[in-house]
Amino acid sequence: MATVKYKQTGKYLPPNILISGICFVPGITEISGEQLTEIRQLIKSDRLLQHYLEQKILIIQE
Image (cartoon, rainbow, N blue to C red; front, side):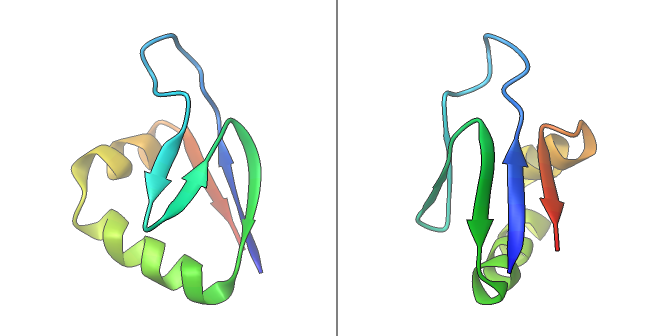
């Protein structure tokens, strides 16, 4: 089990982020280990999601 925290820090960020069929709204969302693996694979190939991680807009905690 892991958690993903989405911090909507500015008015230019979307109200939610859809990654691999999972909708992340501002706050904390729990995901399974299998979903975490799939999300990590997608993040490797998506520059915007990489930017969100670097800027601490998306925070993944295992």
